Length: 176
Image (cartoon, rainbow, N blue to C red; front, side, top):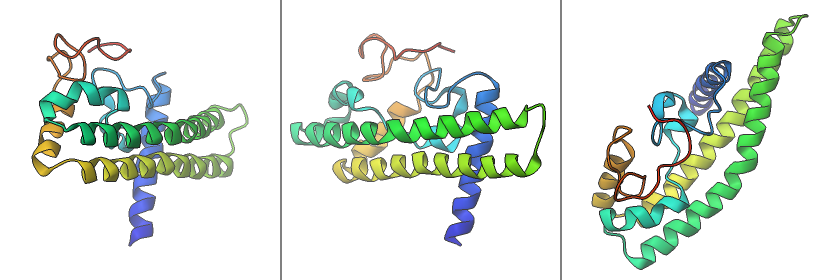
């Protein structure tokens, strides 16, 4: 059962990656707020907040100094882990895309490259879930609920910690 679920998640991730790459947008940089229009892609949907966002969220979530320290530490570690995983996923997705449009199309090669892309994307998803495990171990239940609210607000709305008037500048990228 676990293998089936992993295979489905990996297939969905690869499908999202191909769709995103075909639009010329990198899945590691969602547009329009935290998730933007790529929320249906698992790697984006499970992405935790960045370490840089912790200070901005601290007052809204009523974080203690100890919680801020723990969150920053675990999210910084996650971001360092994520960088090479995203690079591998991007390379695998690009190789798949190139094979799809190659002059000499090879279906077997495309399937092999799709499996590699799925595996690479699954690594990104797994690292994000591990980071969420760390985040959730630090937050109280009420704080986790508030964090969900912060991360699901629509782009353009004021967001503590995520930009807007009280949260400082918006993260880079086009706004919707």
